[in-house]
Image (tube, rainbow, N blue to C red; front, side):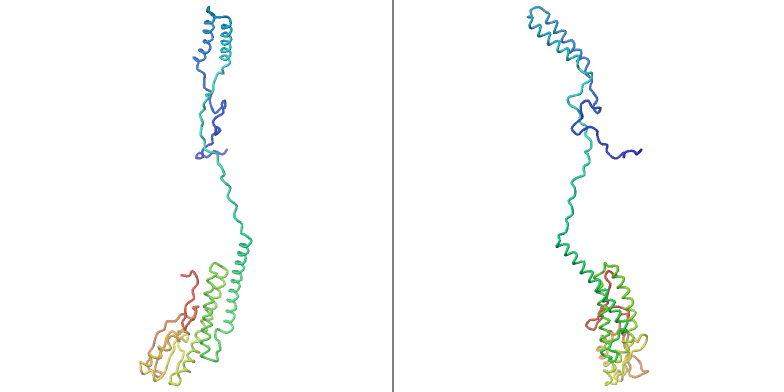
Length: 305
């Protein structure tokens, strides 16, 4: 048998307006024996008074009638009496459910149309973004991120711009940062695009060095891309016997060398001669980035630390 919770208040069985007379909740109050004796003796005394001389027969008849009535009343008094005024036992208020909550407001037809239109627009934007990622990756696979390879100056510039567009496309995905499916697709795209970039930049540096050599040949200067990953831009020419010429060329090609992510620039007067070198600080070949005004800006994923 389930025991009642000791902490919970127990409701009173007595009605809120007070107990009902005669109910078991209120015990009867006993009539005083002295009161009963007084009621019983009073008619006797009164009868004795009437039997004395001097009272008319009518007065005696009325007195005897009144005395008899009083005796009848006394004989019919109950053994116990309830108080006229009873004690009210206050119990905990009956639990109420409170007012019913108001029904939720339903959107109007205009609001619902706007919600559906917004949802459709977002779904369309997601599809468009995924399609753009897939199209860009397919193009990168086909071209190897190298464009117009027969024209060195155009090739490195157009190719760098195209790689920068991939960086823009990656950054655009931050609009869908809360969409796990989009982010998973985007991350897979980033990994493959980065791998293609790692193959493209060494080739682009060779093409870039060839374009510079073509512009400087009149000054008896040759330019080549050498070293690991073709990451060193090397200039050879008698002009570099003078430090001012090294400084002038370096100031001119510094930003341009970073476009194809060269890591080092070297200057010498002839093969086998001493080298004057400058360390550059490009982004890694695998870094996705936007390219604007000749400079790279690394693309970042929303929420990344």
